[in-house]
Length: 480
Image (cartoon, rainbow, N blue to C red):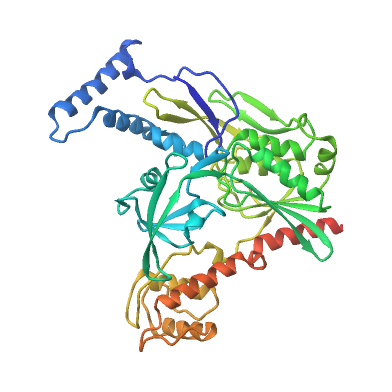
């Protein structure tokens, strides 16, 4: 049985430790007790196959047993992946993946396109944000899981597939044919933000993937050439990733040999993890070690993101702006099983340089600042017509959005009362929307406009209060 990787967060590398992880029913060697337990499992399998009125393949029973054992641990981070699921998880962190290039979300059983990747097969075929995927080739996706949908979309590079989407803004179904291609999993983005005459560097890290460290060096080097005076690192909603990527990032901003985290095994033994600057250019390190830094985090910043926050904050290298992070302080390792699946188990705790275990507690921000409420609203494709007295989820979405936009809303339960109708009328006037049908003001034209308003609002950095506070905090430090 081959060990695959060590994991912090989503799927993380780090340690390469040999293991004798072993599942009894593949062999009956071992102690008398283990043989008895294996006999019970095999007996149950025989009974199900021979006596149950429901025909079940042996492979399916083995999958169920593996999944059941992982679930029995009662650890949300210890799990069993089927062969297909394991491949999907590995692709999340790979340098590139084969697909059509879309970010998807699931809402009430509907699969909604958050956005197509720029220049991807999906974008070239005409796919847009808020399109709802209803069919892949000849398969309807009603009742499918996200994993099943991804399995339908993924395939060999260069092969074709046809996707049917429903586009609410046009109230029609659209068929698109495209070819699967290699999509770059770029995890680091950067830009220069000018504050008066001061250049501030911004780096966003979506996940800590295989090539994040290389991308980090490339992006920060580009910023340094533009003479930035401070750096904002944004790991909001970053769920984690490879530990070696975090180690490289920390090493580029701190002295050689600094302890950036500790690993603690089941017996309580501590292993310090230290920075290593050997692979970096000296001039690059000299500048990166002295540039002022602010780290942006939120409740979605987890695991490897928290390792970064704990290291930079613990050594006084950076201040943290935002809210308390998620709080995941365990490390997972994955093993490949004979059936092609993988077993992921929590094998270590990780602790901050001050030997604090953040599991279930998170890392507090130096400066607590809640995000603008409108940023929490997820855009959903909505259609239909509603009048006073109607009650629906679409109306509840409308009430929530309009209230956060500053309109006078009395209730948020989805009942379209006179106050909601008045707010909708006022919104339509502000946006100069065409006259609605008599007595019906909440319609598809209204929904399309509302979603566009929310999208535009969230894309404007001026409305991102956490980002604005990070910039202000950094400017204050520069002026001291």
